[in-house]
Length: 113
Length: 113
Image (tube, rainbow over all chains, first blue to last red; front, side, top):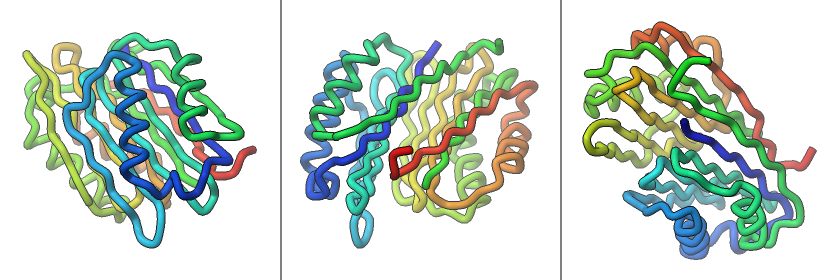
C-alpha cells in the first residue's frame, strides 16, 4: 500500500519559487525527513519563470511544481514507506514560508478494493 | 489551474510491468496523446522487481510505478494543459491490458479556494 500526499502551498516568496538550488535543498530535507533516499533527480526551469523539481526516491517519488507569479507551489509525495503527514506538511509549510496550504491524502492500493 | 489524474491499474501482465522499455513506449504514447512533450525522463528498476518511470513534461509530469508481483501499476498525470480524462484512462487501460482500474481526478489550483 502506498500513500500519495498532495500539498498546495500559497503565499510563498516569489524568489524562492524561482530558485532551483533552494528548492532542491528543501526537497532533500523533506525526503530525508521521511527516511528515504534520492535515486534520481531533475530540476527544470521554465521560461520565463516556474520550476519543476522531481526526484525518484527509494520509496517512490517527490515533486515540486512552482508558479512564482502566484506565490504557489504544488508538492507531491508518493510513498510506499511510512510517514507522518501532519509533521511533513508543517515542515513543508515552514520551509516555503507559506501563509496557507491545502492538503489531500490519497491511498494507492495495489489490491483492488 | 492544473489537474492531477491518478489511475490505479489492476490485472496487468507481470512481464510488461517489469519491462522498462515497454513502459517507456507506453509513456511516450500517452504523453503524445495529450499534446505534451518529454523534457526529462528516468527509468528506475528496483530489485528484485518493480519499475518507476518518471517524465518531466511540457505541461508538468507523468509517472508510472509498478508492482509486477501484484499485476498493479500506479499512473499519475499532473498537467496544466487540457486533456480528456476518459479517453486518457481508456487508452491507458488498453495499453496495460488491465482488467480493472480506479481513477481519481483532483484539481490543483494556484489560487486558494
